[in-house]
Image (cartoon, rainbow, N blue to C red; front, top):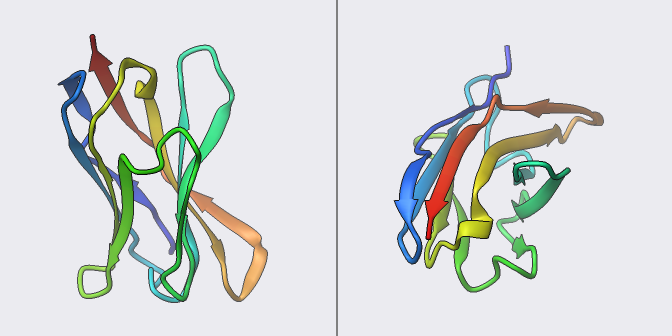
Length: 118
């Protein structure tokens, strides 16, 4: 059974850093494109970053140069390293994948809360 399990959220001051792991039992993170999304309070969920099966990373404009998505194939985990955090980065962060074998099938984690204080 596929599960995505995020962790690493918490309270951090503006300018600080957090690293969010997304463990993915049931799938292989290097065989499926993986992504991070977030939902800020009162806003729609938005895409933050993604990593392709080939390892190419892409970022939303407002996190580019501050966030880094990566994966550890041995640990079967995708990471989101967040630096220079701003209060507007506050939100629930979700990990997501679409199965390479059937892109119509998607899985979401339950999310982890990141709060950035000013």
